[in-house]
Image 1: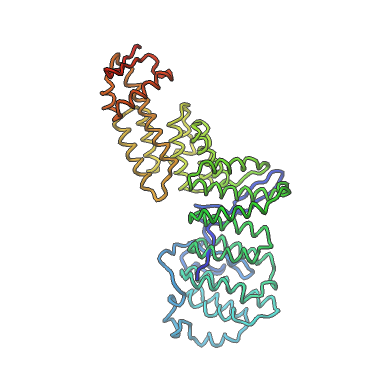
Image 2: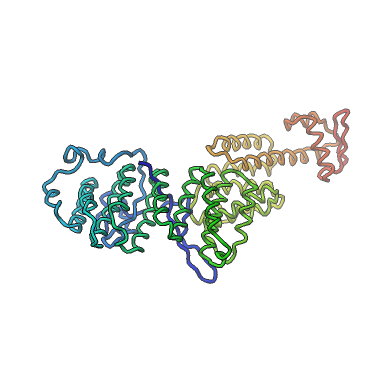
Length: 493
């Protein structure tokens, strides 16, 4: 059964005169990872989670956090996991279970938790007995049913039984009388589940989130958070049309009066950041510029570092496209620092590439690569290739520059998602190097054959002529004279 979830935990927002997003309310993290306590508070970490007890699983409703696990290669139905442990249908067939069948929800719940410590699968049939208890007006009994489903979801997640996970999640709405439970507790539980089970297949994540959006469509605050999570997952899946259509509906829900509400501005900024990510992936600079200008109209809000990183990345690309390399370098540097703060290594490397590219193209030779924040990451293999390109560019070493350029270009062209903007600017670097090399090469000579220059730079003679004419009129080589008939350049220095 296809269902979908979320990806990374949200982050909370704290308000004063200006609004600052804290790490708990922001929901856009794309590369962060979080450790979730899987076992109960009284467990001795039998699953090998390193004794992490940051998020405890007690009996008062704090047991909804899921573990961060590597569960690749595990899938299927839970029956595959515990068939053979008991009866032929995959359920346990112990005398204890028969005795417990008539017990109340509370005793069964603690029985299940005890079984879970010994072997995960053994707890599932007992938890199912609780869930199958007929509905009642007893809020305590309904709460144990709700908690039993949460425990079952944890076990199914751990076992990688994704189809069963989807079915079990739906029982939250079919087997439990949710209105009898504390509203805040239920919403908090769903929020933690959305944030915690980011190891589920994305389609299942989307199904879960979509179900919650329908259930809480009248709860604007929770609905907006869920939409942010949904769009973040869709961005990772490159389902751009679906995101843009959804964002248009969201924007229609905002009106002029919302500008006075800081929490609405924060939500709006988050949605703009998602849209920026879409256009960054699409390499759509005109749209990127359009959305970026909207983000600049939102004031009195101090964004979460992730949002700042995205906005600065967008502005850096805009300045890079406009060939304002000084400002591009500054924006990329700020973007790097913010991505570094949230621990997004993929983005850190990407932004460092852009920072090096803009530094090469920048005539202002202020070197931001010497900053303390960057030094550690310059050892990265991908970044080191760009640093070598910078080194050979500055030394005007033609052979080594051409070799390193070929290596960098091949590396970028082989990526699954080719960055067209980066490739375009790498080509600008190559042309810039040819010009710098040509100026440096000609200066010592009074007379030089255009054919010889053509052979050295591997450029047609006609193009060499055009380049030299441009250098003369730009006053970069003001003293040269071209003899186009004999194919000679004279340097009257």
